[in-house]
Amino acid sequence: MMLYRKFGKTNEMVSTLGFGCMRLPLLDGKTFSKIDETKSTQLLHYAIDHGVNYIDTAYPYHGSGMGRGGESEPFVGRALQNGYREKVKLATKLPSWLIQSRADMDKYLNEQLQRLQTDHIDFYLIHALDRTNWPKVRNAGLEDFVQHALQDGRIRLIGFSFHDKLELFKEIVDAYDWSFCQVQYNYLDETFQAGTEGLQYAAQKGLGITIMEPLRGGRLAHPPKEVELRFQQADLHRTPEEWALRWILNHPEVSTILSGMNEMEQVTENISIAGSAEANVFSEKELAVISEAKNIFASKIKVNCTACEYCMPCPNEVNIPSCFSAYNDYHIFGRKDLYSWVRPNQRASNCIECWECESKCPQNISIIEELKNVAALFE
Image 1 (spheres, rainbow, N blue to C red):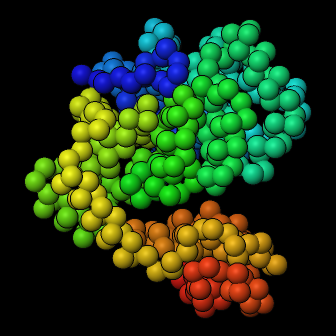
Image 2 (cartoon, one colour):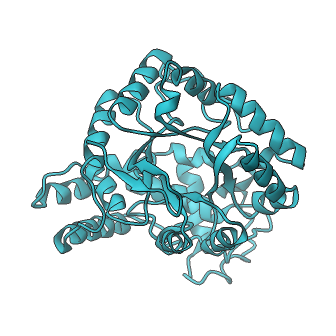
């Protein structure tokens, strides 16, 4: 039986597990814009039939780029026909990076309503707020847009998703009477972006909190062998995925966790976990297991970069923290594909050895030498 939690200061009750529609099954297994609609519909309907009532999508999901609408929203609109729309709370997001004017906000919202085949969005988020997108949408008339969209019923609750530093997160929380927010959070990301402090700050302000990347894109479900062995040695028999999800749901501030499920086995397992995971129930032994797992992860980190960005901006545009993040993730999880997220002009090989960054690094990292290691590995 699915558990539900009160959504912050609102009267809404949401399932502790939400269905994230960013990574749906693909028709050919590789083309991101080609959704296997039959399989995806089966998974989504099963989840809803078994109590999941929070469905999350966004304008660019399953598309060919961030500048145009992807296939996720139209798929969700079709899948929620025949009575399923009435069973769920539907969440989607305004593409903040595409907003140039107040009129753009109405344009995209109205387009999304058509794509989703609905007359309202239950939970509407301003997507991916950071130091660039936040001032842009705010100055373009965000408050007026939200007021009118709430009044005319096109949206029911307003929130935002976030990708930046804690200080900015608090600023955004305080800037408007939001109903909820969406942040990245898992047992490895307690100090990343909003982190635990941001989680608690938002909860104190009465915001409902939706968690993205609870498994770090699935990587925590397949941790290093040493971490998996530590979980196996625990008194409680749990998969790495169950340890990760239960740890998040142990936090009473969390309303729901989003999981991108593309196999029926994942759906049934996550429903089972979320259906019995309550807050404030972890014992000292359980917390110790997670702490030991974190220490194993930490021992595999090659560059002790905290992403404080004191080294930035680089005179030649190298994104030093992102390069080191991908480098560390490779040594932890064995994946090289994460470096593809670093833009070509910001990659390690663009370093001109000006030494400006090293004088600013509070961790005393040999940045120049480590960037050479990053370039040697990835480029």
